[in-house]
Image 1 (tube, rainbow, N blue to C red):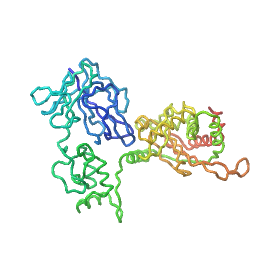
Image 2: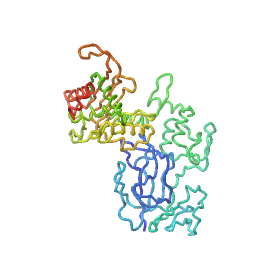
Image 3: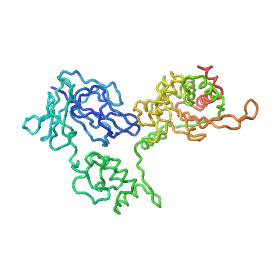
Image 4: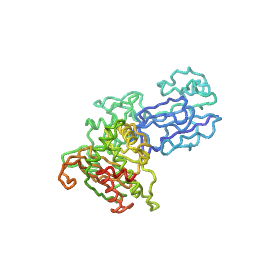
Length: 482
């Protein structure tokens, strides 16, 4: 007898609690292998293809494209063969799931829908037991909703129980609602996601006035947000206005409410936690970067792959952390211990159209300048396109923040919790500088270090920053200490 396993939306890391279904990669009836991507979701950080930890036949999917699901909500169910061993695991591809499978359970087929038997034949579920053609729609629904299919390559031993695509809630529509300017429609509102309903309710949007852009007129989060931006939300009642104004007053003259969500919301939560928990301090120093710029130019003139300035700064950072390991650590507040780490996983701040993200270069301490340059380029492009994986956004031990690209000299950045320090680099600009006893125009940069005062005192932080500045001013110092 086949066993049906339920695969739930895993914890995608970085404290994310929900994700939006962008695109299903499998249909009901498809045969999937262990770790095969089954759905593409968008989190507050990136677009992610989620792999399924089970192999077998997809018997149900939960949620339409455009629906937001909380972590732990069912994504799909998979039927594995009766001779299959304990469900294979994914090797913890994403945070929060791996080799542990939930208890098996069966789903009954509603009358009037179709199911797939062990031979891949679609049968009516109205009690007649009559077989239906493999491609025929059932119960008047679209084929993608009411038809389950099994690929030609399905294993003979895998027998899917009588299940069908997960039914939509009772409020699902049968036709698209009227346009945004039309009178309110009668009947159920075409909304599946409770998050969409909450967003509309909190902002006073009448869902009956919106035309959904999703399948079959389904109202998506984007439809509500577009209505808010376009000022399509109807006027609130006097009572609603009083309640909302007393809860969060807006300055006289009006204003615009922008939901603190998505990337902006994730950044706000993380930075707020950093400020609450970490007693940070900042020290800074100006450094003459002329020789570092000359060294980079000479390296690139010698042929081969070009070396980025960020890669050279990363090499200096990893060398500095080897001398001052206190800064490559985090505080375990429950155990009241400072945990010093052996590997340097270097995060770097990247500003994208979706907001600020911090990709992580794994084992930066073991990479040379050429390897660092290539990895920075790859992660930056992934950040720009929104394709960073959760693993590429988590696990950093120290952050390098090049805010000089914004044309500013200095900053007091907030530490990327739970790390212990962040090195900030300002713009490199020609300035008057005393060099070898004479006034000269040199390429000057301001370096700043924000550190967790629990892991070290100012002497250690100042020693690290001074070492970094010395390497910037005289790159040969780096060679002597490697």
